[in-house]
Amino acid sequence: MSGHSKWSNIQHRKSNQDFKKSKKFSKIIKEISITVKESGTNNSRFRNAILNAKSVNIPKNTIEKAIKKALQQIKTDNYKNLNLEGLIYGISIIIECITNNNIRTISNIRTLLNKNGGRLCHNGELTHFFKKMAVFYINKKDIYFSIEDFELMIIDFGAQDFKINNSMIYLYIDFESFGSMKNNLEKLKILYEYKLEHIPKQIKSISEEKKNKVLNLIDKLYLNEDVENIYSNLL
Image 1 (cartoon, rainbow, N blue to C red):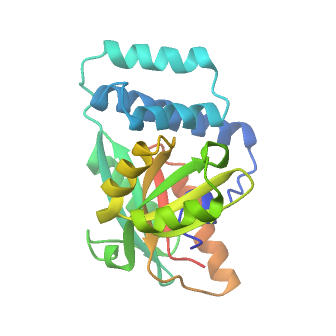
Image 2: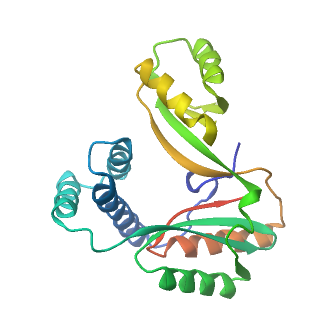
Image 3: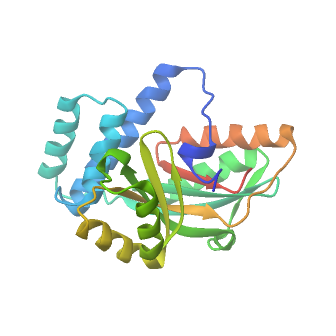
């Protein structure tokens, strides 16, 4: 599987590196804050948010301040998840947002799409082009079986696909099999993190010129502080 998520198919090409870093820090700190307010600090969602912060070298004291502030605050910001759908040059885009103002976010995303040759779609218009899947991330050093034996196990646990690189194993699980995979990995005492993603059922190829325009639009969407993840069926 390829071309299905922020980290696997979108190369950021913004020239101002300091600005990019600042935006990324801001998004991850907001993610930590929302997670603490909604779920507390004793769960995999919180651990995943902290791992994300450490992966981009956010200072430890910055992380601790964000956690402390979130714990002290009464939940008044009312941030909620909002998924939007866009279409450009026949390419379907799912835009995951976290916002405290749906009207503002929808208006901003609609404007960006319109200005760049796309359009905002009705909810549910494009979701059938994607499959909701869980992606489990496992460090190879945490596997105490042979890779061959582990592959046979995860197939029995419900894995639909998997990838292996130098240090990590990525397992792709149907949402219906999420519980089975999670429970079996925990029984085997295998450490993992996971993320729910929208995987395209089929990927589409378009001209290089149009592809660059789609990627430029995605870059602009990511500049919006409410946007968390973007998925497309672009090859």
